[in-house]
Image 1 (cartoon, rainbow, N blue to C red):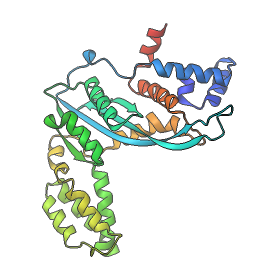
Image 2: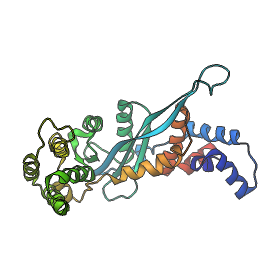
Image 3: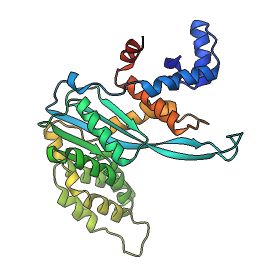
Image 4: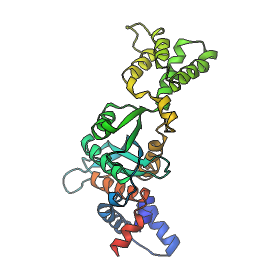
Length: 294
């Protein structure tokens, strides 16, 4: 029941249970059993059982899910509030490994920072590990990376996000036929450590201050404020990733496939329980839970 309930809507999970096993279960019973196990399941491997990592690759990002606050009185459906909450998802893995350790929380940025530290430890973080961080450069993420790992690693700005800013800037700097060439030239400069030339190319095309929609200025400011996060040449020399596709993929298969379904709104406590199930499965702790439960 819990297996189906963590993968599909509760109504669909009931149908699948009948389809596969000819077992009839009320939707509410399946829902309660699924969430009960979500509140008790372990989501992270024990650090003592993990091989130390000389180099650790880690990412953090936020993803929005639909949340519901019930109303008051006999009918909780009346006066309910629907809004969006951010799930903070992080992942860490040793260099050379394809399997990462995930963590997810609906808590504050500080709660996410504590979780990030635990996830990194579960992936092999030691005092001597080099930590390679990746992301879109959001201030809160960089701050928490610095708090946790700043003295033993470096944070790199996701190359795809940088490329988006450059592509937008190209639309106002050169003719349409030359835009792709211009963008690729700036990308190549960044990859080769020639950041000064990129700033020079942007600075020469900055829009006047009175113009509100200014993609060149946006790209220039975005990169200038994150100048220390543009170490692509060094990352490539060390065979480290320069894109945050791993955390983007995690948003889809850990969070969104189950918690962002059409018409689905979650109580916060239930959302965290479902997140726990999804994270435990992603971390290959599913069978361990059922062995301990029996």
